[in-house]
Image 1: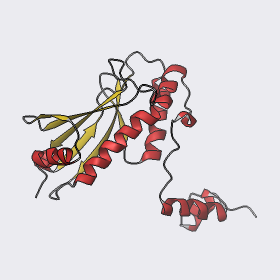
Image 2 (image 1 turned 60 degrees about the horizontal axis):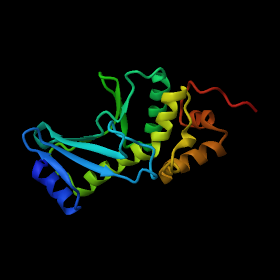
Image 3 (image 1 turned 60 degrees about the vertical axis):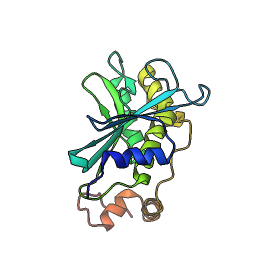
Image 4 (image 1 turned 90 degrees about the horizontal axis):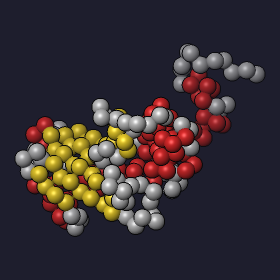
Length: 197
């Protein structure tokens, strides 16, 4: 059974989140405000407010959550640096991806294919939390890239999430066996350069 729009509303109601529901388009608009001193992010009105839209499509078999027009790059001279920053952030966060829209705006989003499985509240809450993290914590990185053309992930307001234990273990194994090239060779990658004695 696919997820219904009422399911999504119930998940938000149970979490006591305020939202606007647009039943005809199956879109929920959820807003999160912060103290101006707690984040550098500002919406188009200059407020420390993150607007997240949650949309149910394909008869409830696909859900997407996104921050529309999070950063306006229409007049930005450093789009390439911003795209690099977004790609590097995306590689760290895994859950969130960034789209550069036709209107020149960069927006983070999360897509959840459901097919016939019902969505659970935790999936929706994780999507909302992931988008908030991407916007609030990485706004300094995006803004710096917009203004200077350089990418500096150290500007993130919080430490990047630790990679999962299995990824950390693979990285440790790679280092102990002589680095990534040696690890690729051990795994049978014929294009890896030979190990030098």
